[in-house]
Length: 203
Image (cartoon, rainbow, N blue to C red; front, side, top):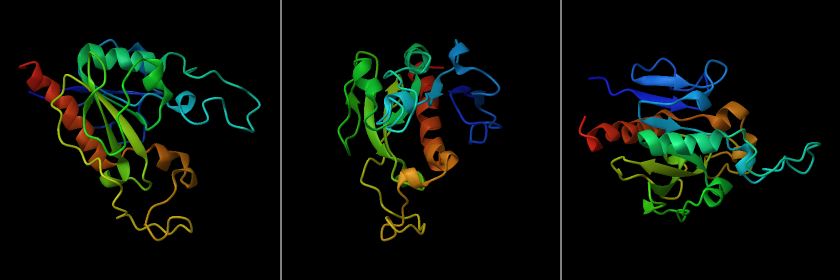
């Protein structure tokens, strides 16, 4: 049996489209907010309105409200709680406090985040990203596999005057696509977590 997984809020050029086990939901093809099941999910809700510059940044002519993402994170949280799976967002995301989730500590493993699921800390460079990219994961009804939550190992040799000695680029120096990219190793981790929902449900 193919363990189907729905991937929500994903980039059309990422690793999800074309994968035989993935039911992809992302613009410009499908609005992920319309997903209502039935498969476990991998969710990458937009983070602009939840991060450091949630208000739009110091030069922005438009001032936004924190969490003003047209209901994307609220739906993402509903989906992962309803069908099981994994949600990822940048470290420091204001969505955790806004929705009452307990924040994982840096370099920590899984902790109980609320009545539904668990959170942990990951640096995506340990899974192939071009920058350190600290990330929080939120898992519901999954097997809590051991994750590499150590400080970045600096194995990706990219010439950059600021991070040259480490072999990593600073996130803001990357292109928008590279910043948002899901490395294949990280994709495999998320897919394994989501697929483990089938074992949890005895399917």
